[in-house]
Length: 111
Image 1: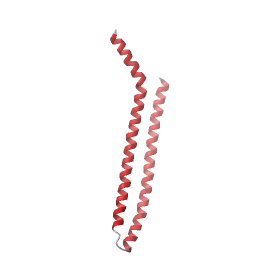
Image 2: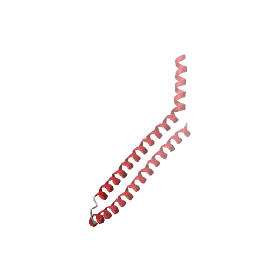
Image 3: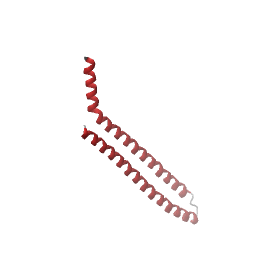
């Protein structure tokens, strides 16, 4: 008798909190991916900045200054490309999160 009561209570609790559990999993997965994206972007931009610092510290004459100017242009192109790639990754991450939310909403509407 008590076994049935506990089983029924357990089943109802699981059914009630299952959407919240799935939502929390989706948010945690998205937060992890977003954090990894930000850490990778920070590392990339730090590497670019450190490379620029190295190049600038090696300027000794006019030719070095000209070379540094050319490297600056290359760096700006690299930064622009990196920003576009980061924006694309962020957009994909947002689309995946939205798709997951849509799926959860569809499941909730069916229930």
